Amino acid sequence: MVRFCQKFIPKYVIKKEKSAMFISSLPPVHLEELLKSIIEHPIVDAVRYNTGVRSAYNPYETISRILALTVPLNKPLYIDLKGKQLRAIEWGIVPDSPVILNHKITVELPAEIHMRGDARGIVRKINNGNELYVDCKEGLVGKGQSINILGKNLKIEGGLLDLDHQYIRAMLDLGLMRFMLSFVENKDDVRELQEAIVRHSRGTVSVDECEIVFKIESQAGMDFVRNELTEKHFSEGSAYRLMAARDDLQIHIGVDQMPAATRDIVRKDPRSICASRLLMGLEDGGVTEADKSDVEHMRTLGYKHFMLSDGISREHSVEALKFWQEYCASRPFEK
Image (tube, rainbow, N blue to C red):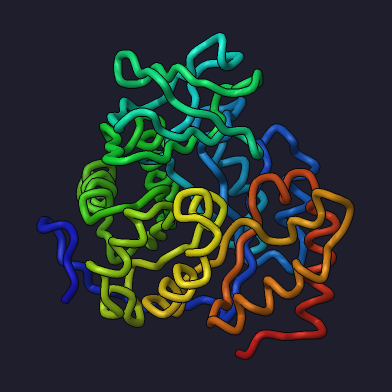
């Protein structure tokens, strides 16, 4: 029996799901028409809400508004918790202003910083653990923007954020138990979420009733997969599953290491989800042959479950969902 949290022994109740699942990320809930159109689309099997997107409503009402659309269609909802993912907490213009992070960090300087899109620079100075002074081209850093730091001996202080705990509590109060956890790098990251589930449910919900997706997005995450996890962690009925979160993962390990990484993830867990960097041709006008080849390659490796990123779901949902529906009709997944 596999254990991460010593307080709890999972029973591993078998969870039924489709043999192949297509997950769409959701836009902010105030974009009601887009939210509704994505959830109601017949090709969408499940949806994911990114808590890094600032909501106009509190966590309980945010989830409730999504549930009003998903429950009648019996479509699962995953809540993506941010955990150790680094994000900017203030607006600023670099290099004149520092990048203010949601977590304190230590890292050997100079270190690389990757911001939205292809913007990148060099971290020259860190004050108070989370004020990063950067050498880069002038650019705007938005509040909530994902930030990636690449450098030797990077350590991130803290784990689940206060907002994460609010969403965990709201999910459990509403009877929902599907979680995605960003930047999982070790068993302590998993244990923290498990303990939060027990605490916020006042002991009425156990991990075996939940589904916890480990989002693998860094070299440390890959080391965890390769060196500390076994196939037994993901055996039939397990509460756990892996995700190849390819956008941040590619930033951290480099393009050359991606084929081996995506292969190793799905070999460890056949139920792994392939996420991000799907159908990126839509950002330049349409689905390309490279997009189709990417999907085919992931399927060849063994992936059956796919998830669209925030950007593609928000900006190109009509084209993306149309393509996936037509693709599945011509190349159906085995049942």
